[in-house]
Image 1: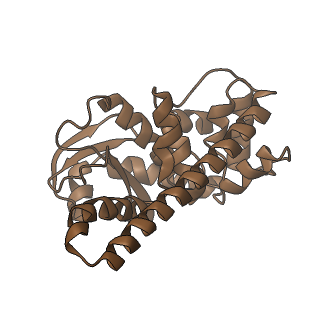
Image 2: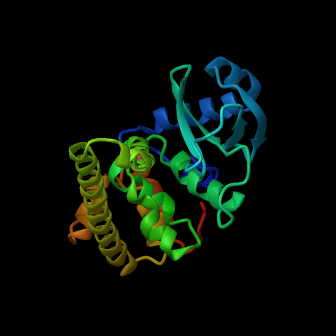
Length: 254
């Protein structure tokens, strides 16, 4: 039990379907890989400029190939020797003035923590909860996957050419853009309301409900929002970790 809490503080959380044995193997594999970051990055074929190991469990790099200008940072979930190794990439230069290095890393560390999860619906929403800005907490997770941000950027970059193409195609692009933005905004509002309901339910019993939700799957958040039990087996590594976290007000991972 002590090792579960300790590893959680280092940024490791058991996935929904991991046994304690599989979880332990993954933690040890990640630590072993990150102990030799140069060999890891060369083996993965990642060209990097610099390496910054934050702690035992976190590896932050600045890659030679920069991120798209609208990306603050990115976490890669790489396959290495049969295990998933998360690597955080920071931008090569300064991004928007309101985004500090601490903000970027806090956000990406949530993705790192949930690297054994595959729960896209609330993933970005949970990560953006680390932001100190209220509007970023609400609007930040408007995209659930990278391809949505690329599509949105493609719409905006096409606007300068609209006067030079036939009206039918111009109208199609504009209508498609508006429809897309309305759809993802409605989805975001719905998901934010569900998350707030789930957090309110947990907050009736625990002061660190937000931390506990970092360990929930999409379906478990939905169940909690509806006032139902999340149904996490208490005998599972994740169930045992959550039980330990509910016994304290201390925030182990942030």
